[in-house]
Length: 535
Image (cartoon, rainbow, N blue to C red):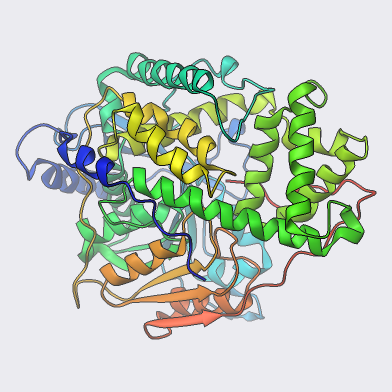
């Protein structure tokens, strides 16, 4: 099912076209390609000295860690260097279906989980899960923290101690006064990023992330890269495939970002807000079908009324003094990413409306011990997206486009605006997005995985990437919307993933899979834990 249409932003298009976009590095146009080759050659010679992981990483002893050096600025490969942290579990070489059968090692499988701003350091632990054992037999599972993330030359834009501001408001139709406060906050955040990071800030961008990936490939001793990118990681992979086509072995794009330069990143966020409205409708329809369990209403409209009732009550008196409308909205936004959150969110909302705020507080409160990681993730997210492309610099454009969108997609529209608005006031130079493309024969076959109702990366993005990469195969999970399909609940999708990564087989140009089963309702009289962490 097609996601909501793109909001018409003709005036914004003219403004975006007129904005100046400076390159990230200095020097001649071929400076960065030459710098990348220099850095990759150096990394190939040095390799990665893997050993025990630092205790603060919280990784089990089966995982090894190391670092790889990359230039801050690829136009100056011998200038300032930064270190990226890397994690690995070696291929087991054991067939999980026949312990006596040896499995040929196929090299390293490198993963980027998205964000931008998410860490991949925990990816090697996936090899312990049943659905990953065949891949873990053939591949070293390699994760890493991209530049700016975690211990990889970390970025920060504000004091983490002040990052969580809950309980907070989240008006569906904000007043002019509320908008002025949020504009002031966005300006202050952009100013903080510039002041805390100085001239280094401009080098945190997607093109440098792709160059870092090639240096990591070389450091791992791989002539060609086998890569699994999820969400934003698909855009990173598409850039890599465009910049380094001869270095690609196999590449999986899981939940694809629309790579059209005109979409990066302002319009992609408009599309995302529209798609989250569709996914919110899916949740409400599911909750209505299970009114006998949750009592939130037997129609989607009635479920919306229950949610609105809770939001109004929280605005007057935050639950546990910690959860206001802003925290409620953030918690239910995660249900837009993953439908295995649906039973727990519905149960918490039901319990709250019946007088028990405990489950809602547990699921929606902001935990101070997570503030530093959350602040770092947001700093990297904004640095990359703000640096990658021009954004409208006139608040009137944002206000016009999103006021129009919010009339039909109120659930996430303004929350998305407040997340991205610092890009309007960003102080680092902007780039022009690379035109992602690969002609016939330029790449080996690549695999795109997409769910038709994915809200975070709407399905149109997968179609666009498929058009742009000749030889790519698109596997679609029909009538489903969970974000991130690799290793998930759909055996059909996972079968295509294994066939591709283990044998290099793709299912022609297009294939489809029936949706995975809807989640079963959790009993309303117990507190159910989260089924998976949100990204």
